[in-house]
Amino acid sequence: MTSIATHRDPWQQELVSALRDPAQLLRELQLPQSLLDGAHAGSKSFQLLVTRSFLARMRVGDANDPLLRQILPTKAELESTAGFNADPLQEAAARRAPGLVQKYGSRALLIAAGSCAINCRYCFRREYPYDTEPRQLKDWEPALNEIRANTDINEIILSGGDPLVLNDDRLDALLSQLESIPHLKMLRVHSRLPIVLPSRLTRRLVERLLESRLQPVVVVHSNHPNEIESDCREALSNLVRSGVPTLNQTVLLRNINDDSNTLVQLSQRLIGIGVMPYYLHLLDHVSGTAHFEVERERGKQIIAEMRCELPGYAVPRFVVEEPGLPHKTVIA
Ligand SMILES: *Cc1c(COP(=O)(O)O)cnc(C)c1O
Ligand code: SF4
Image (cartoon, rainbow, N blue to C red; front, side):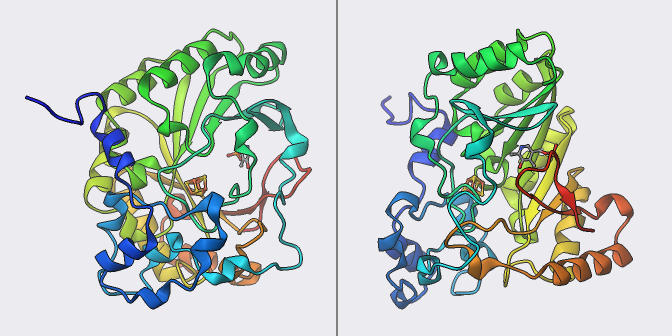
């Protein structure tokens, strides 16, 4: 029997067949091509990218679908707005070695991959210079040496891009290196793949995390209750039941989730499968994202309303990242 998929895991095949053509996306959603206002032409380095799984959770014929809005390039991105720039978090200043960002004393972030399975238009790293970050295991040596030498670091956060776009072998090789550093205790994985490409949560991956000497914590990223459906629900629930602590972070986004009903529903769906709401982020001021911004006061009001309807553990902390501070600032 021949199959073109023989050398790839199913999730890798799905990633290859993710949608990259805005015209095709609109056709499949039965939406007018006039929604393409020319924006995609201006964002060559950060083009449309969305998985079939995520697309399947969008409503056909609805130009305002909250999942579609997160990924469809629009002309508003081309506007420049005062106070919005390429690196508002000043991550460049916190770069300790290729791929290593350390802003907080006890934890360090590895930019483990330069791509994602979806391009979120509001992404805080949409302008990040991934080209200069490590590709192969040997490129990680300077970062690993830095971590070995700094015994204050006890937690590594795999970030990106999305660290879970790395295949199992490469992930395994990187984890093995980290596991050999005695002062490390915790391994955090920040990933949106469990949401947008649930098939990535293979048994092999989950077992690898559970077998690690390091305590794993997975932080997923979802913004709307419609994301926590079907294959995603099942994969997340399985992850939690396998014994991996799983948290969720959300970005507060105008016309997508900036009302308490939506966020209450999101929290309810998450806790219903054992995923704990962790952070609700105020938008970082990256160029091209100003049209997603929600006022801080509005966010506080939403959190206050959520508190009236949810148990305390289901209300995320409303936070903002301020450059130069050794932790996030809790607003509410
Ligand atoms: C938020 C953040 C972390 C993790 O912070 P916690 O508050 O421990 O979740 C780490 N690195 C960067 C760059 C961050 O923005
Ligand atoms: S998954 Fe995360 S890092 Fe990737 S584009 Fe979306 S927000 Fe950015």
